[in-house]
Length: 258
Image 1 (spheres, one colour):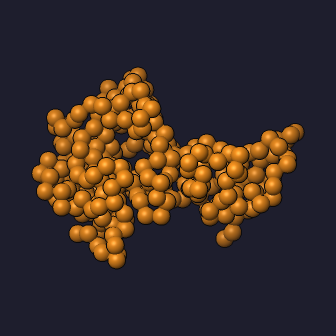
Image 2 (spheres, rainbow, N blue to C red; image 1 turned 135 degrees about the horizontal axis):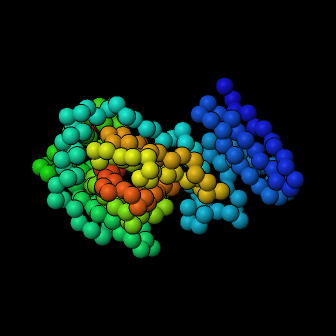
C-alpha cells in the first residue's frame, strides 16, 4: 500500500505527515517557499538533501528511516546469553574508547577481532581463534545462519558504559550499501529508568527516528551509515550497560561464512 502525504497547517508552520506501515513521520518547515522537488524527493527511497542544509561531508548519504533498523529478541538462547554475560563480567576491559575524536568522556572497551574502523577484510579467522571471545563467535555463527546470512565479520568488540560516561552521535561507516552494524546487549538485567537507549537520527532535520530500549539479550541490526548514539545512563543505574558490537559486510560472491 502506498504512503499517504497529509499536509497540516497551523499559522506559518506547515507539517507534512507520511503515514507508513510502521507509523507516521513528520517533516516540519517554517517557510512556505520550499521547492516542490525537495518535497517530492523527501519521501522517495533516496531523498535529495537541500544544498543549504547538507550535513557537511556526508551530504550524499540518504535519509535512512526506521524500517532499516531490525530489532530481534528471540535469536539468542538462554545458555548463550549466560555465556556472553560471564564474558563481559570478566576482567577484559580497558578504559579510553570514544565514539569520535571530539568526545570528552570515553568509555570502557574490549577488543575481539578485526582491523580499524575502515577495514573491509574479514576477521573470521581471528575471531574463531580468540578463546576469550568464544561466546561471541558462537553468537556470530547464529547470526550468519539467520539475519546476517552471506555476511562476513569485519570488526568485533565490546563497549561498556557507566553513569557519567556517554556515547556521541556518529556513523560507523560512510558505506551506505554494504556495511552493517549488529549490537547485542549483554548485561543481565536492565530497568527502564536507567536510560541507555540506542538512539537513531535522520540526516536532514536531526530528528530521532527510533530509540531502542537496551533489553538484555536483544539484538539490533542496522546500516552502518545511519547516525546513532548510546545515550547516557541515569544516576540511579548501578550497573554496566554492555554492548557487543559486530561490523559486517555481505561476502564477495555471496560466500556464506560458517
